Image 1 (tube, helix red, strand yellow):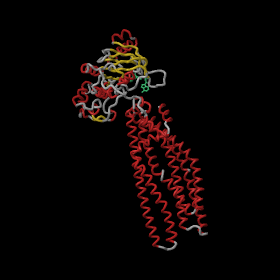
Image 2 (cartoon, helix red, strand yellow):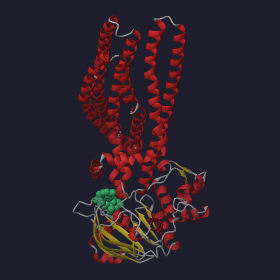
Image 3 (cartoon, protein in one colour):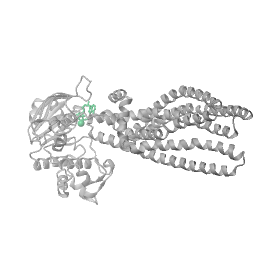
Image 4 (tube, rainbow, N blue to C red):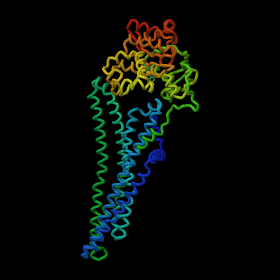
Length: 595
Ligand SMILES: Nc1ncnc2c1ncn2[C@@H]1O[C@H](COP(=O)(O)OP(=O)(O)OP(=O)(O)O)[C@@H](O)[C@H]1O
Ligand SMILES: [Mg+2]
């Protein structure tokens, strides 16, 4: 998270604008048309009070009915044009802003798909979801507002000013005083409001993250009877937000009395001076009427401008967060001339060191040297946090090494096309996921072209066929989101079958049978050995019995290899292994807590 904050600060406003404007381009026509229609609306609105004055002065006071009809008809026509232009402006603004939000979401989503594991670690999953949803909505609303108001408010303001000066320059001086007063007031209050709102949005973000985390882990929350604690936590967060919103809104509310004071002050002053001028014959009644309308126009637009300003600053934080995701470059990329075939399933580690945190001095894996022949079965064993998962993730290049090199089929993993490498090196991750859809849909993640027979064969190898056959709909059984309607062991076996369908040269099982009973575990291993003799099999396990008959076993101890050899060799010359074996046989201990 820290690194993001850093790059977040370093993104300049210019970078954000240039990135976002790229996604507006497709909708440039509605983006340009909106302000045009809004200006037409304003022009009409400005002329109408002028016509009104004309009706009063030349029609009503002179009793000229024909003039009233003529100018009245013109007023209606202008009002209709204004209405149409306003509607069209709104439609185009909606089109442009919804289009922008669609493009932003697509761009973010596309880029997220290229993210490596470490990119995702940096943003965190709930963080990415907030950016894809709330932040985009913020920017969409702000853009819509900007399109509709950026021209409308200033043009309306200026036109109303000009018209007032045309009618009576002396009377218009009253506005000038009011405008200066209001501008000073806004300058005072806006910085306070914006700084407050930016804080509110950070809190909002925290809230979103905690909601997403808790809802997706709702089962754990229930299992630990943490509902009350979580509720309390949530209520506190929501309460905080409430307090901050109220305080921010309170500040905005002070706008209202100040605005009203100014408006009524203006009306009073204009009526007073205007009446005097009418008495002396330098102003007509109609002109006074339109001056009052322009007065409202000017002050309202000024207020509108201040709202736009607050809204823009509020959405700036969201725009930055979106730009960050769009501009984030994947840590891993394909080389220029990538290798497209993996020769065999041999694996070599040469002086490999790796750490998740690049600035930390202590590496997670240190000085790893390994040579694994194609077709061998290798067991990996070690305490929790000893970097077993980390070690295997380097083989399919989920992360890049910091030092040394990892070779697969005789070539550095960084020289392969990532797609080819990951298709030939199948991994059943420790934290696995299946997706909503039928069992067959899920299996075909491994190979989209697999026939039903191939899927069934893979399930047979993974000992998944027995429970699938027991489902009423068999292979068409619908899996709920996250696989919530299958058991942990069933899910693991489906994940194994899915990986087998890839036709890999290397297959890695990261603790993949931890929820499967020992007999089934042994059956899976046996069928793999028989049906995939040329495939290199790497098995991370907690139980020594799961890997006892492997060609070689790696004993990992806190990021370094403490032993490498067959079961018999390790029993002879590796103390850790011997201890753990003893305690597992007698059933009194395990890797983390030898007897
Ligand atoms: N994505 C990550 N970001 C930062 N640190 C990580 C990440 N994944 C693992 N680590 C750290 O790296 C170390 C090794 O973790 P790893 O997952 O490889 O252990 P493991 O041997 O697979 O443990 P287990 O038996 O519990 O699965 C641990 O100290 C862990 O905290
Ligand atoms: Mg692990």
